[in-house]
Length: 465
Ligand code: ZN
Image (cartoon, rainbow, N blue to C red; front, side):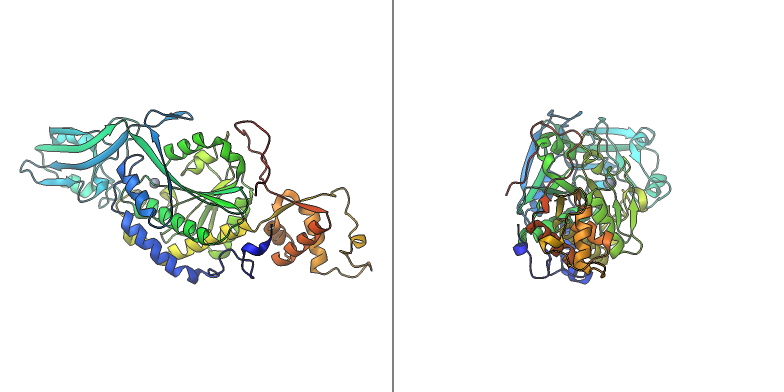
């Protein structure tokens, strides 16, 4: 393969050399976030479909619908949930908790109900945050049939005794779980996965920001000519990635690496969470990139808590998939509350997150990996015209690069790793690699080490052009 796919600077995204170059993308990301923020999403239902339809205005999507009851790994696709309206009304008929005012007011996946109850009984179905009394919590009950409402603790404290009318006009019945993919084909069939969850209702950072930046990254990749192929997955958290994994086992052998992305618009520092493997290509490159872009960047070791990296990094798959966020999970006070709204989203944070994504992808895409074909002792470079004839003089960068590549090219480390380890410029390292390939001392390799449990079994795939 040649570098003809890239511009003269060797960059996949030549228009994005600095974080400021991402200002327009950040503005467009915010427009999409604002557009999809009001939609009531869940792990199934029309909210996910409507969200994906808006994303499809930016990029073509392949939609998959998996029927309720389908077994997926150790799980089963649940019944589909859709909601039209929900409220609690006081004795005068006035709506005091109203789904139409904020969709967080309903416990997500609530079973339908229409009943009159005294406050004492209603209380068992009300959820608040006593320590954040002005915020509505985000609560779900996907796997246990239950109904409920979420409200501010301040409001709960003011509710007078009496009888309340409770209405949840929802449906929970056999249907489908929806997810979407966008494959940007590169020269190689090796794939890099970008996955984001699409199941949260009106929460801006935790969900909408990841959807928007993943969509724009897919758009930018679709305009370039990447070497690797990039698969974008927009799926409901946990059950969506489990469904995708269950239906794509044969594809996983081609997976070079990946990133779970989300929570990318808040003012917290860039945060990279390593894959379970800890030192895979994406782990090394993403750690480098976040450190370069953000002096306050956080690097987290893998833990089995968080988003869909839990599924990709489950031990049977053990995929080299890390996670890029800013303030992850419960690392920010607005997390899973009504305060995770559009006001939390910062243009500069979106721009920096976007730039980090572009840079990680660009670096993975150019991180060619090789195998030394003459690894027992150093091959004689002089007789091949690659090394100066006179010994003793300090070898130049090019000759240093030859030695570094020959020593480090075991199929795992790539051009960027060798450049970082040696302190030599990447362009020189690549130039030296090209010379060694031409001399028959080096060959490019295309796949990550075999998966822990490849399935279905069969010969390992080789590079397909
Ligand atoms: Zn969440």
